Image (cartoon, rainbow, N blue to C red; front, side, top):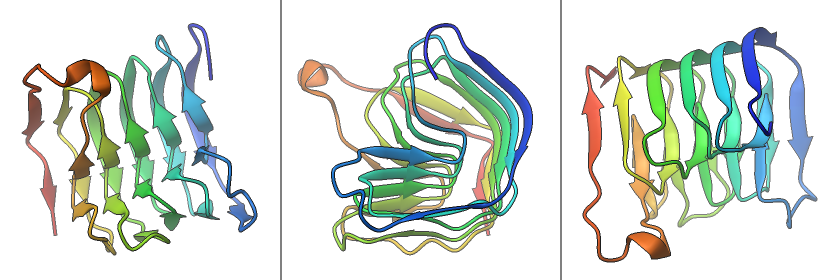
Amino acid sequence: LAGEAKASYLKLTGTITDKTMTNSAYVGALAGKTNANVEINNIINNKADIDVVASYAGGIVGCSLGKSITNCKNTALVKGKASAGGIVGESNSAGIIMDKLANTGKIDRYNASGAAAGIIGQLKAATDVTNSYNLGDIVGGTGGSNAIIGCYHKNVAQTTKAVEIKITNCYST
């Protein structure tokens, strides 16, 4: 999704499976990658399993550079190579609004050093995650695993800056 796109009120079903996409970077049920001004709201991935060898896999978006992701839920299996997240495989957007997100699907990764999490597999910029939860199983790797955010890797531009990540009113069981 690019430009000033808005995706709202969709229910996604089906399966995304491809073991040959070794050079593909991003796969998500709604979008592989979103650009700066994209807003995603009220999207449900209703068992559209994602089982790919792409680097970043997300139940909703593979990689988010967007403005906001709100009121979204993933109930599907998400399995990727470097990082997998119930909502986003990789988030690389400072200041993105991430609110009211839920994951109940299993999150896994092919790479033993990969990251996995219920909400964001890998975070690369300052962000706030609020009012969100994970009830799905997380199969983590040495790259990091957690219920909400799997790992944080700073961008080259952030090497000398402190980065603030806030997780508020979130839980996992």
